[in-house]
Image (cartoon, rainbow, N blue to C red; front, top):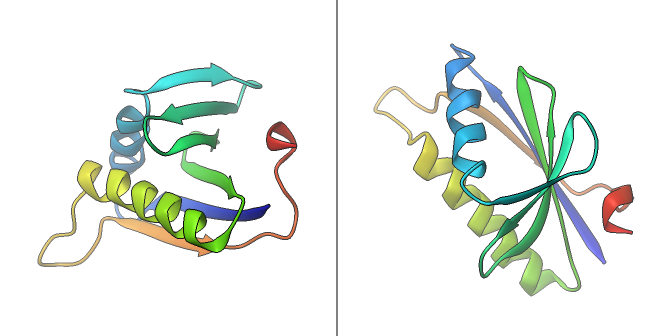
Length: 107
């Protein structure tokens, strides 16, 4: 399994993280803890969202690189549809990385 993680923070206002949070709330959600939920996105699968209030972290896993690219693109599309870029840039700070460990709820 290959893991991907997206950290999402607002650049200028906490409102933008709330907009993304609301976007993911449209989907079926299974709470894992007080700060984590597994969200089921149709045609994509399960993602894990960690919500610290001021920032969100989205975790996903895939069996291969091709599937991982598809999942990453789908997550980016959801975030981009929630908070589109403006002529002045993006209102969100997005940081992608590829952790070595699979998040515990996915094991």
